Image (cartoon, rainbow, N blue to C red; front, side, top):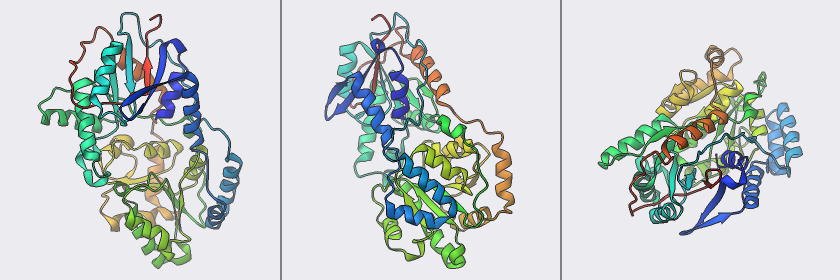
Length: 417
């Protein structure tokens, strides 16, 4: 998301946009060159860095993997821009405040005084993007102390932000409910779903490798993503099917507090040749894997959004995911939804989708034809309309209060000021 925003705002006139980063309790202004370098750094982080030993394991998965591996080796070391520049419109008119501060990251939002001072100094309005309330509702899925930091972030949004942007109606409802619990009036809230990169919209599914079908899961390996469920099922599948066990590809880096999951990944010999981790892929490689897979698996306990679902459906690949509100919002009635604790039902669905004759899979493919993915173009059009409506001089400013805080990634100025 930060990459898409950098692309968008770097395509605006220089005199209208500036960039900040936060280090400790201080803001640091970034030059235009700094921002370009940051954009390229994020893009480079999506280059395939799979080591040769892992490449050899991938080749054992399937003959089709050989083509994927060679493509990855060609991409190594290149600079990739997965999200193209989005042409900006005239966002702010004369008569607006001298600045509009826009934060798209949770980092630093707990530092309220920092933001209060910056708003006053720049005569600015503040818009903040809220990704979820998971650390508040589910502290068991977050790092220690993250629940307290998130409470401070939410307090900052209530006291200091002039507009709160969210990725889903689920997140918007939860934020408003939190405000009601605190007997606080929320600032205006606007839902701006994340867009699917054009690359996925240009990709179509291919017939899967029926000899060795594979499934894919995308996301940082962390407790709430529920990798442990799939690894337990895959060990059982290996006991039942042996060499005919479908493959499971885990796309994402290892996160925090995953001791049990790591023991499975590092020590379980039954999983050695049927489960593989790919911690770093480019979007093009991810699309290549998705288009050949039997389905995307997404058994999370809780989420604020579900971009991998949108990406898979855009490519035309079926999704089996948890029956949680955020996934219902992203996928509509297209995916097959299963309770994240219902292991037998997940096993049944995986075995069914592994078959070339799966009626359930074919029925979902038919439903996918009606899917319309969210786009970054629409996202930024909605952003511009929301900022113009709620962060202009005509909009009443929120009273400044000391208490908690926020993060800024971009500072936009009206032309001519």
